[in-house]
Image (cartoon, rainbow, N blue to C red; front, side, top):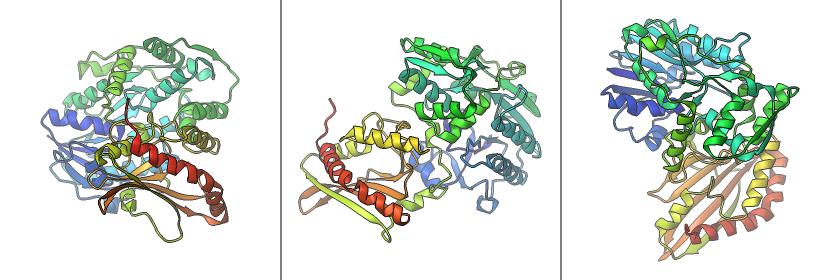
Length: 480
């Protein structure tokens, strides 16, 4: 079959590609930037790539007419307040382009919406379903609750809370029931309904065998990790306070925390098991899903992560056009440190920066900066990195975004996503010149007005010590 995949760079889409290829399907991926897909994906030579931003129909390449089925895996926990309008527009544009093909089926992964008084995000999912029904092709909707897998937002939040807090005072939404499902089973269902006549024009709930409260999920996590954890529920915490609590304790952004808290008031439990008549599957338990996620983490084989989704700030679909750091109106701090080790060893240290490895020098200062960033509504340091051993354009490294990770030319370029009165880039490059090898570090800042310049000069003493110390440690660091 020829299958279109919209959302191919997303958390689910990235993992669905190998599943479809293994079944012998021809996969056509609709992506906003082919370069990012090539950099991040081992399957870039095995699929057909089309460029297009579903919010801009004039940017979408013409789809092949002989498409048999299409997956719509475009979701947004967007920072924009008008996220529901954007999700609806994206779905409408998708219908418009798919209707020009011979597509027989559209498959959409939605959220379980069986409760009353739905949150804004669950209502948006329901509205997208209605929009997609406007396609000429038959619509199949799979509704899932919390998805558990390495790199999923739900798993990472449960992990953050349980690993960091021996004693938790938590809001009442921890007693809301849900039916978590392993990412492996989600992929199995997505592939199982593909061009299955019995799934046409149908909506199915999907979930694992366990129905648990969020509190129970954290306690089961603690049991798996052999941790003792105590949870005290405080019923009077408002949604706003709950959002701030989640934001400061976990790696999530405030907007995502707000969306999650809003959605956690709703029970997400399967009301029907009609999917069993279409796809026979023995789903993993919640505990089995956790153990599988940790296997992937320990093997450094996290395929995709929610954290790598682009925000709606400076970085847009064409963010890879920004690999040339601007020169006009900028301030710079440069360090050029000579070394005598093998360049490959130093480059390996450069590419492993951040996350568990840290920033090599004065990590406590970086931690304070991350805390201050959280305090002012930024992303903070807790996002870490998806993989400890590899890095690709678009990846997150703490409060930086990777613009370029060029091993061939020994260059790493990061863009700051922290709260700043300006824009900042941090570049590492290994230079060989006149029989000598240097590690070049350049911090570039484009200030916004007087406050931006004042910020730069206030930070200058820290730059003086941090960047010199960091360059020295990077060139000397050896793993124990």
